[in-house]
Length: 343
Ligand code: F6P
Image 1 (spheres, rainbow, N blue to C red):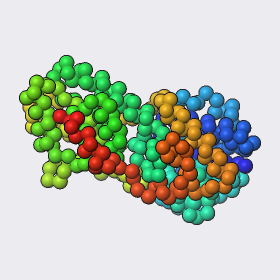
Image 2 (cartoon, rainbow, N blue to C red):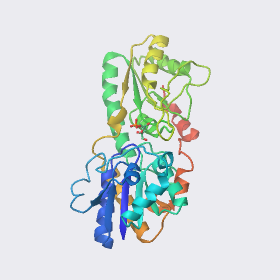
Image 3 (cartoon, protein in one colour):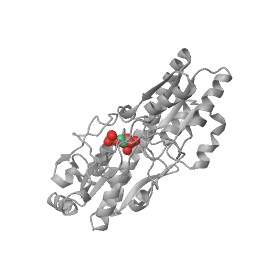
Image 4 (cartoon, helix red, strand yellow):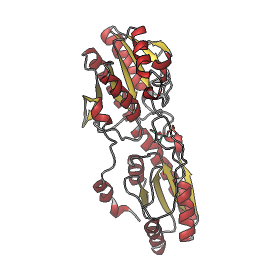
């Protein structure tokens, strides 16, 4: 068996752990050979490839990022994209390709699968917003980074009687904001699924002051938006190859709005790519390893068009189509369950 592997979309702690597991299982488990493609779907499009061996993947387990590189290249936005990918896979005499990615990378995999290409998906994203799997690797690490930052901001907020706004990643799902906010004891958590009322946010903060709590922590997902009727504009207007707007700015906008409306000194911290970099947690290393091992088993069994997924404590196979059908968002009732902790 000969397998290709690529990592696409935003990088994510645990990608190298998957690559290592894929190579170990393929080479040692099945006597197979593995070819790594550079920079996501750009690799197969432009035939940027190199063999991956047990030797060349030694020592990468705890390293963040991806030794293969990544990009947000969309095969379907390139002339003859699917044909170019097909030709590359044939040139390397590959039986199939393992695509490690989120909704965009796997969305491409799903469409290529419909055209007869043999693909296995592995779910990846710090946002934890892919369907058909209970959790994606990378989320746990991002959560730890965000929670640690909130803990640190808490002590300085308290010392200076300030409102500190923490902007975390998550453009259409608020999992990082919600879980880090709950873990870090935030007073206000704003997520894309629940458009917020800035007056209500300010009332919560002022109410804390009236009770002698002169500082507050506000955690906002980058995709959090004000309810209609307010005038905050948040998008830069730029989009990537998959049409996603480049976000950023909610933290700063909240800083200004809260300070102007309440009169309390407010500062914003944007965690940004810090959440995606560095060493994966033990949980993410183990999950990534399990997903990688199972993907090679799936390829060996000819289960093309499937994705490895975490269901409770088991790794199972689901159709890639199921994972990319819709973004897995925070259910409103889950957010509301935590309501008593806000303010
Ligand atoms: O998809 C993961 C993610 O980190 C999102 O949370 C974020 O909105 C986006 O990537 C940022 O992408 P980029 O690094 O390309 O700006």
